[in-house]
Amino acid sequence: MIYSAQIRAARGLLDWNRDQLAQAAGIGLSTVQRMEKGEGLALGQAGNIWRLQAALEAAGIVFLPAGYRGDGAKALQLSNGGACAAPTQTSASRAEYPLSRFVWLEGKAEGATLAFFDYVLSAEGQRDAVIAGHFILPYVFGEEERRKLGLD
Image (tube, rainbow, N blue to C red; front, side, top):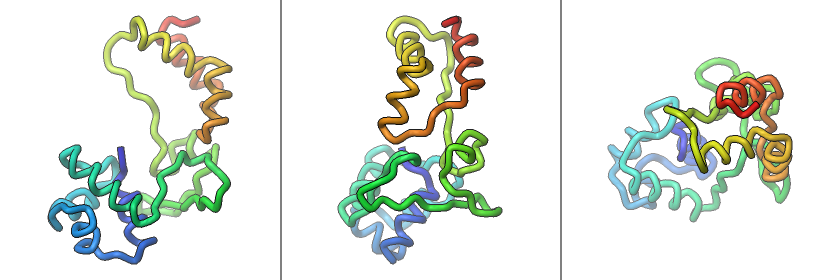
């Protein structure tokens, strides 16, 4: 999964134009233009999106969780057309950072899916998420989701 804003930012960091990115990824220029056009997830065939991300990574771009720090990683401030937002716990929790996203579940969670959500929404799961470089889910959201899923 890659967002249009990530593609534009990565291309800017590399000082590449769209044609250079298309050539590096082995995809058409119009495909790159279409992927960069939106404000949310880049739209396109999965193979083309994978090739584009692989080309960026081969050129030195690394995609990390917003909360990751270290090894020379630099978090970028992003904008959806308004003021820039830094990737912080607060901006992610308020969905002000353009790349913040929440899990969307359609239908009823059962079996392994329910067990996964039970773990992710638990104190242990949230601790592990922070260790992995993600921001913690605000307690009120976690409790609300646990109630919706019938976990408490």
